Image (cartoon, rainbow, N blue to C red; front, side, top):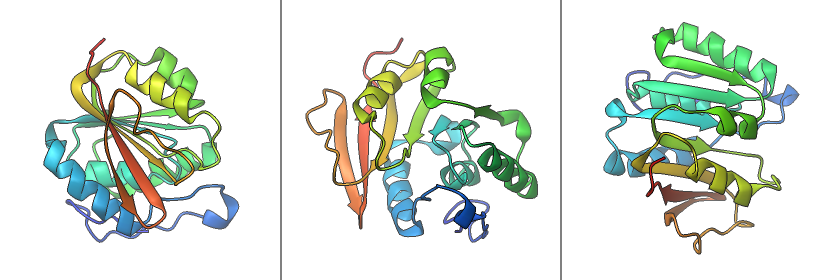
Length: 184
C-alpha cells in the first residue's frame, strides 16, 4: 500500500495483512476518493474522523494532505499499534492525532468534537450500515455542510436517505457521500 498524495506521496507501508481481517481501500479507489474530496473540502482546514481505520490507510492519506486533526477509531489493538508506528515514521505531529481503541458505536455515542469529515470503511458484511449512517449524521459537533463518506460494496444502497448527496464507484468499491445539514 502507498500514500497517493500530499507531503508523504509515494511512501509505501506494509502491514501484516495475512494476520489481519482488514480490507484496505485500494490505491485506485483512494485516488478517486481524494480527487472528489479536494473539490468539496479544504482538507488543510478540516478535522476528520476515520472509523474502522484498519491499517490506517485513509488516516495516513488525510494527514499527508494536511488535515489539521484526526481521530482514529479501530477496535483491533494490533492495527492501532501499527498505525502509531507508521505515524512515528512519518514524523506527524502527534498532538493532532487521537486514537480510540474500541467499538465505533461507543465512540460515536461519546464524541463531542467539531468535525468536518467522517470516513467509515466497515467490513462489507457489516450488519449495521443503516444504524452507522444515522449515528454519524447525529454526531454532536458534526459541522454544518460536513461530509460523511461511507465505503461499501454493491449490496448496500443509500440513495433514498435524506442526507445522501452522491456516490462514486471505483471497481468494486462504492463511496456514498452524505452531507451534515443540522449541526448539533
